[in-house]
Image (cartoon, rainbow, N blue to C red; front, side):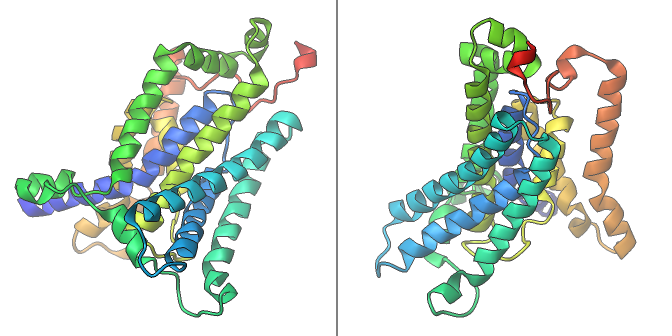
Length: 327
């Protein structure tokens, strides 16, 4: 029984990492007033960009260097996800296109890009089969060297690759940045009231662009974690499932707080795999359990709306385009 509980905790943490990357990236974006529903697509592009970079390097040398097996896919993922976030920024900030429509279109586009290159990348080089980056996957999955010596604790909490710990560090760093730095306070001001922030000399356009690009880059790391650490360097079309949408749901559940998102991601990761650890469930019961993250999010949204506490509300200008001439 104890072993099963620790195995469940370990699996829940594994599932929570891509959710935490996506949620942290979206929190940074939404704090500027941009509602980026393209996060699922950005995670796909981040994953496939890392796969492409890793594939090109791993197949260009007989003896891949471990450091380059990490750096090249990492940079490729960041570039790919930031390019998609740049498209979103240009459309919504510069051209002032509707943010909801743009985000949904970006998700469809990103998933299509991921599945297209994931299914046809090998054929471009005259090969067949599915993508599998064994050496690169090993580098990303490498755990702390002393984890095995700490028994069940080490196996449960310290057996992850570096991206898992990076996700937590980024979330904590984001919380500090938003609450304790002048730039973070300026970003929050832009999200709350861009007209007032503009009048105070804050460059609204710059903050919206940078927050969306950085948020997209962080979300893209969630896709990279999934393909490199979770699946060990393999790509499967539509393999991400609804993790991107869960990441957006976590933003609401965590009431736009990065540190709360850490625990929320763990909770959602546990709910995501809960049906596997409950024996004898019917298919309908499994589907009901899979609905729990969304049901819980809706309940939280209802509760915070009823309580009307300002600190628990989304940024006031979230989803609204800023027209400077109307200031």
